[in-house]
Amino acid sequence: MPGLIDIAEADLAVTLEDPVFGFGQDITVTDPDGVTAGLVGFSGDIAQVIDPDTGTAISGRLAHVDLRISSLEAAGLGLPKEITKRTEKPWIIDFDDIQGNPYKFKVQQSNPDRTSGMVTCILEAYVE
Image 1: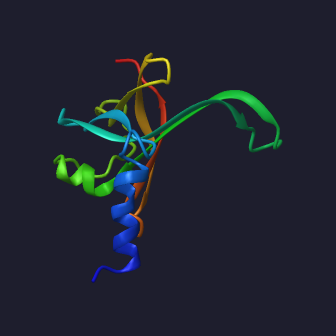
Image 2: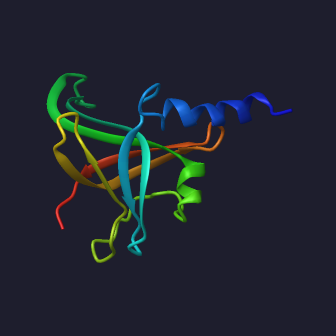
């Protein structure tokens, strides 16, 4: 009999990956070696952030994706992470906004939750 944590990870298949009953949205992930996989997850791209120095809302950009770790592994990918050296290729995340406009990002920060089986990647705009 599966435990509660196993059930919660399985529920991510609906909450993160189901386009009808969950937040499922097509997301393409490319690792630094060029391995690309089409996944389904949750994305966000908002234009208001909080200035950490003043606590004031300011115009900015905060984009992220949430993906199941098990889906990344099944696609032959590891956990996305920030690549700090400009001479190295970054992890690339592509997705469309609600109007169908395509956007390309690189992973700025990776926050895996190994208890729930999900990774949240904070993104920044990327131009090749």
